[in-house]
Amino acid sequence: MIIEDKKVVSLQFTVKNAETGDLIETSEGAEPLIYLHGFNNLVPGLENALTGKAVGDQYDVTVTPEEGYGVRDENMVQNVPMAAFQGIEKVEVGMEFTADSPEGPVVVEVTKVENDMVTVDSNHPLAGVPLAFSGVIEDIREATESELEHGHIHGENCDH
Ligand code: ZN
Picture: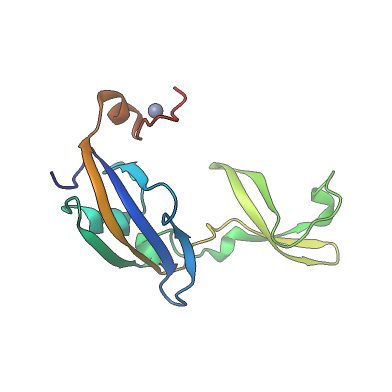
C-alpha cells in the first residue's frame, strides 16, 4: 500500500526551520502523527512529498513558505490602543488573544508594547518560514467511511 488520497498515514516527523536549523517540533519520544491524506490536514508541500511513499520509507523535504504556512502578510500586523485590552492587567509581548475578523476568530500575538500602543500580529507563527521535514512512514491503512465524511481520522481519543 502506498500513500495516496483517502489513506490514513502514521509517521514520525521532525520539523526544523530550514534556514536556521532550529528545531520546531518532533514526534521523537512521543506518539507518531496520524492523519488522513488528501484532506489538507498537512501543509501542501509536505503532503505532496509524502504521496507515493510506502511503510518504512524515509522522507526529507524542504517546504517553501508558499507550500507551508504561507508568506507573511504585513497587513496582518496592527497597532491597537491599550484601552482595547479591557480586563487584562498587563499586556506583554508573547501573549496570545483571540480576535474577531471578517473570516472568523483569529489568534493574534502581541509582538510589541510601547506606551499605550500594542502591536499585534495575526500571521501564523510559521508564516514566511522555510521548513525542513524529515522522518519515516510507520503505517498506512484505508480510511473508514466516517473518517472520509469528516475529513480527519478517528482515533481512540475521538469524542464523537
Ligand atoms: Zn470526526
